[in-house]
Amino acid sequence: MTESEFLALADSALNAIEAALEQATDDTDLDVECSRSGNVLEIECIDNGSKIIVNSQAPMQELWLASKSGGYHFKYDGKQWLSARDGAELYATLSASVTEQAGVAVTLSAP
Image 1 (cartoon, one colour):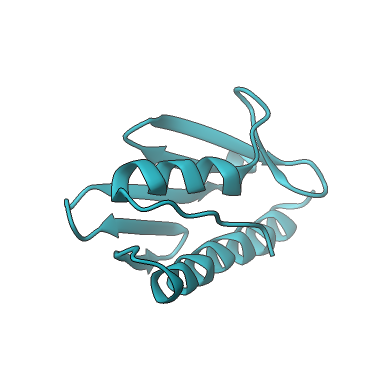
Image 2: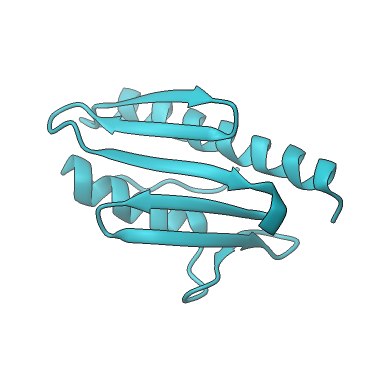
């Protein structure tokens, strides 16, 4: 995949994550604030001030997720973003991280 293809794919994923979290705040008791600066999406859990960061790393063609539960690197396999560590899917890992940090069960899914 070319760098421009990766950047478009990563941007699409970050936009989808932000939209899914906005929908979850409308549909549940989830209270998070998303802010985006370039390739970095910061998700702040309003109740406790903790943060989850999702960002793209173009040189490695990965999306990185940092949360209280740890740091994860995801590569696109042609269909979905999978963890280099354990093969877990990005949206499942992010759902678990948001649930843990915000204290509200959420299930995010890929568009």
